[in-house]
Every structure is written in C-alpha cells, then in structure tokens.
Amino acid sequence: MSARPDDFVHVFEPATRAGEWTVLLLHGTGGDEHDLLPLGRVVAPGAALLSPRGRVLEHGQARFFARLAEGVFDRDDLARRSGELADWLEACAARYDFDPGRVGAIGYSNGANIAWSVMFARPRVLARAVLMRPMLPFEPEGHPDLTACAALVLRGERDPIVPAASAAALVATLQRAGADVTAHVTPAGHELVRADVARAAGWWAARDAAPTRSDGGDDPVL
Ligand code: MLT
Image (tube, rainbow, N blue to C red; front, side, top):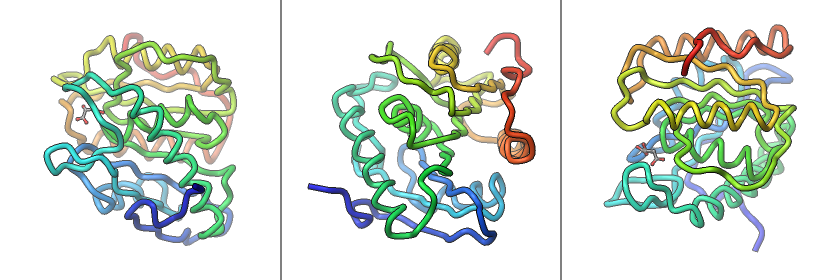
C-alpha cells in the first residue's frame, strides 16, 4: 500500500519565503510533533517545517523505531521504519507541494538516528541533516553514495547515552559514503543546549550562503 500524509500524526508549517527548504523535524524518545518546531524556526528561518510523531510506542513513549535495550537497535524495525518515513516524505511533498530535492532533517537522539538511517537507505531523500546526539552502534550494510549530502553531527561531551566511539563511527561512515560532514563536540550531556542551537543555525546558514564542501569541522577528535 502506498504511503499517505495521514500515516503519521504531524504538523506542517509552510515556508514563509519562496524557494526555501523543507525541514523534517524528528524528535527524541518520548517527544512529539511539537517538540522541535521552535528549534526548526531558529535553525532554518523561513523554511517549511514538517514534523511527524514517531509511531513506535515504548512504555507509552513515542519513538521512530524499536530498540531492544538502550543503545541496542532493532535493526529490522529500523530498516522498515526508515523506508516508511522516506515513502511518507514523498507523499507529503505531493500533498504540500514542496520540492523533494530541497529537504533537510533536524533530528535529536532517536530522531537523529532515524535521520541517518533514512540517508543510508534512500540517499536522495535528505540533502542535509543536523544530527544532534546520534549514535551508530553497528556497521550498516551497503555502500550508499552520499556525495550530494551534508551532515552536521553534534555530540555531547559528557553524554552518558552516546559513547564517543559510536558518534565517531557515524562520522566516519558518513564520510566514507562521500557526505560533507562537520562534527562538533558540545560541552553538555545528552540534552540539547543553546550552543547546539547556535552551532546548527550557523551551519545551516553557511550552507545556504556558500554551498561548498566544508573542512570537516573544528574538532580533531569527535
Ligand atoms: C534514545 O534516547 O532514544 C536513544 O539514545 C537513541 C535511540 O534509541 O535511538
């Protein structure tokens, strides 16, 4: 059965400027479609915002895919849900009349993890992604071509949930796939702080101003 916009409870806010990006906002575990709207408005002012609520419930808390334990993903479910989200995005582009070639994601924690998974599963669906507190706890299959994609990876220095090696593995994997990756360590834990918002907004604006490849970030070690 083909995807329909109503498959996900969601909010869509149209762009307030012509030719703007559409930003897919992906909340963390226990969040909902309203959580990241203020963040989206600050990071990508003028862009259309599309914010779905994850359809997996873990003890009543919404997520975008199932996990077996903290940091242990249900990989079959992740693959299936990533395909569903990509199909849904396509259905939304038709309904809301946005350019499917100018869609970026901003994801936090579980939302960041489904965002990179969508990038790997369907390399053309997300041209840019702000990945806040993501992790890559396994070696993904396949060799996607992400040379047309850009990603900002924001790890928390004292994050008790995301091991540094897991964030570094994601950066390395995105780079191997050809993505233009900027990585930064924020002096924070798993929670988002103002510095993350500022960093994300600066990165987004810089890419709009001069969409050339970046230097890979200012942190020698992620
Ligand atoms: C979370 O809090 O959701 C985890 O850190 C990340 C995940 O399970 O995707």
